[in-house]
Image 1 (tube, each protein chain N blue to C red):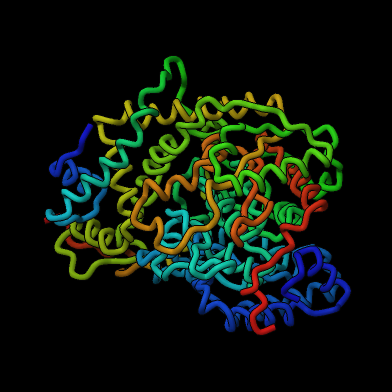
Image 2 (image 1 turned 30 degrees about the horizontal axis):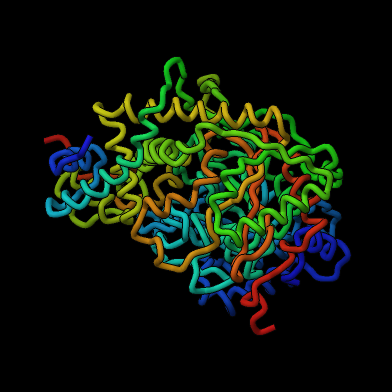
Length: 95
Length: 486
């Protein structure tokens, strides 16, 4: 599975990280080096083995749908780069 | 004062040999004097530290007996500390003032401890040397041309240079144990789930765990008594009953069995192998029986770890989008541009490399063959450790394949750097407690011996380490750098 320059463009879009087209080759080399290290692990026979997602095979705990925190809008906005009337501002999305 | 352990500081405060204010001011002065050269702290807030120390002195005067009341501590800069900059050593969070405290910070504040400052680290905990920080690398007090280890570089260097009596760190594949080994400290990673991750900036949520840097195992147990415990805000927080992690440490080691994989020691340079053999002989003299064990899937640890951690990191770091906090690019032309340029400009190279690797692995073509396969191999690795730990009380290994290396030596080679995790990453994959303790020096640089135990048997590891430390003095040795100007 060798990644090409086009694959890098797609991957970068997926990851929402801008890359310049002149970087795609060097990134492909780096990622392919990392992927090559996985060959032996990929080949391990794991028939009948369940994936281990959580070290204790724990299930997501649920709780009652009851609000348990006070309104803290100001704190939550305190680090935002751009706000207005209690909202986070982003470039126009809807035309 | 700075040469005292936590237990000795507790006794000193209780017997009024010094006050918490004097202690805090002493460390703050040392930091001013010595840290420019080391770069172990990112933020030191003197006013807050002094205020906390004065409050602690009032609590002590009115009878507080909490062992950590008045004790100054340093915290890795990926723990949220309310009102204080919390940067994860990244340009992305250079302007972030945490609006809340991490769980462990809350617990330590309630105990009356004092925050000396936030320590340097590899950016978003991605690294094994301390060289990936937006704020520059941290140096090793044992030789300032060498790395302190990572990712908890600053915490390790600060404690080793006696700029804090103890510090917190985080460990995802060895980021407490490896710098502890490089800096001659006791580094402890509790069982996954024992200490709440609430407020700990996430790298890989199924692997991350909060840990400690102390000068000995006794102090590690003291800290764990405050840090451990159920917290509903961490959905993987364990409901294990509270226990006193110091209660077993005085028990002798007669009857304890420690497992070793011979090949782990045979691959080391001869001088290091000899040092480890001496440590093993010392343990046998304390009553330990050494048992040969096998960990058949161990060779896949690094590959498995690289996939699981990159996939989880890609997901965890998706929140850094320039909208609600953190770095935002100038003049974004649309939302997509806002996201992609903020992230491209805000993250360092290693962080971007890992996110892109995670994105590649999680794409449709490789999701089953690479990601799900890694999770299955993860179970095989865990099963190996669980089976071995049915025969022995703990597993013994080197903490690292080498002593600290020179700054720049491995910086541009991620595959070489990843080898640092060879002995440590499996404990994170399997969720097991693990500890590194000093066991000797090779060419003037410290070596660490690692213990890995069964899940929730943290007290047993601390006991083994404490008994070893009663019979040896490697852990008492301090770097010359720490004594500059005395």
